[in-house]
Length: 271
Image (cartoon, rainbow, N blue to C red; front, side, top):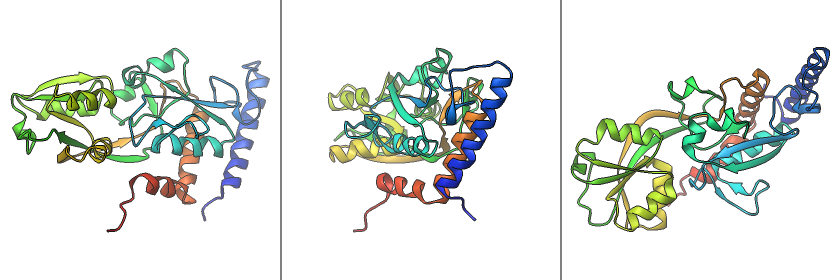
């Protein structure tokens, strides 16, 4: 039987209380109390997330949202924070600093929410939650580019985001292409519109957003890469934090909240 959100919060509260007693007995950190005890949070009572924004539909600015940001990653993390009875704060950082683990080493955030693919290389510096999204790569091209597939990229300028699996895929498969790295999708999109690059190779949902904003740009190919996104945490993140995130994520799947959030971004409207 699936547990209710109330039951999960009760169980997490009991676990946090037990952790608090243990910390107190050992004369440990006195800065945390209540449900945040033992989680090792940067700020008491708040789950601080770092993200590279904008990267729609996964993260984008939204003044009406509690954290000031929305998107699939952020909305799902907001539900997790609510389930843990924590506030959610979001900080905008470079993707490179996030995926390399620098933001965690500096103590800037508790968790990374930025369409981060789980890879063995990244796991050397990060701890990941259980996967929460399966992704594809894709190739978006400019009007009249003459590009119909990845085989047509010889001699073309192809935009990729630095530090991403899209860059890795392009290096391995776009033979003869000139790869141009940009810090994020906003810069990629501006570059292709300005004619500085001929194509963008990156995550499918993001290229779909680009194509929908200007239908003259089209996605000519999709690539199955068996990628899965996970929320990133410090390599030495507390076991309590990792387990709390995973437990809440599973609970949101069980009670239908995950599917509701997923459908709000990715469900296809019937024609």
